[in-house]
Each structure stands twice: as structure tokens, then as C-alpha cells.
Amino acid sequence: MKAIDFACRFLSRVQKDNLSPAARLVLIAVAAGLEDKSDIARETGLSPSVCTNQLRHLEMQGEVRCVSMLSERYVMAPAGKDRLRRLFNFHSPIHG
Image 1 (cartoon, helix red, strand yellow):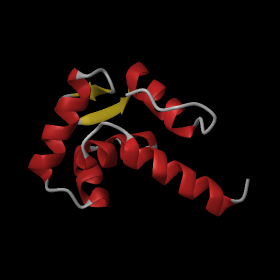
Image 2 (cartoon, one colour; image 1 turned 135 degrees about the vertical axis):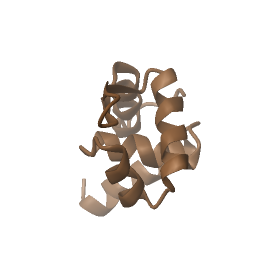
Image 3 (cartoon, helix red, strand yellow; image 1 turned 120 degrees about the vertical axis):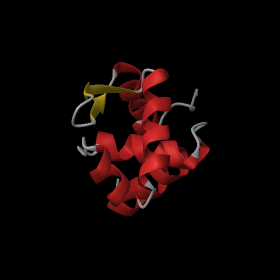
């Protein structure tokens, strides 16, 4: 698979996912290795308050896990890893 094919398939699946666009951005940013809330907000272009709301929402869904309330750092949780696995599996249908 060429890189452009991969990118198009991934973006198409991300677009069809049932998370809000802001939540998708935040989840992908955390999956890419951004842990700090302010870094996530800066890199995604979301306001700090929107970023905080999305992180809390994703945490309640079990998609991310807060590893430090003091420094507001987040990592992927099992449900988030499963969601990303489904987004990268181009041979099966998406199931929320």
C-alpha cells in the first residue's frame, strides 16, 4: 500500500468514526505521543478549555487516562487503543 493510499483510507475511516471532530483530534494527538494538555491544545489548534473538555470526555469513555492531575498529562487507555486499532484495520467495518 502506498503512503497516499494509507493516508486516504485512514482519513476516510477517521471521518466516519462516531467521535466529535474535536475528540478525534485530541485522541489522535494523544496517540501520536502528546501527553501534556497544553501541547495537545497548541498542536490541535483547540482552545485550552475545549481541549480540557475533550480530554475529560475521552477519559470518562475510557479512551485516555490521566497520569498526572498536577501536570495534566494523558496517555492512551485500552478503549482508545481499541478504537485506533479499528481505524487502522482497513479490512473490517468500523464499529463505534
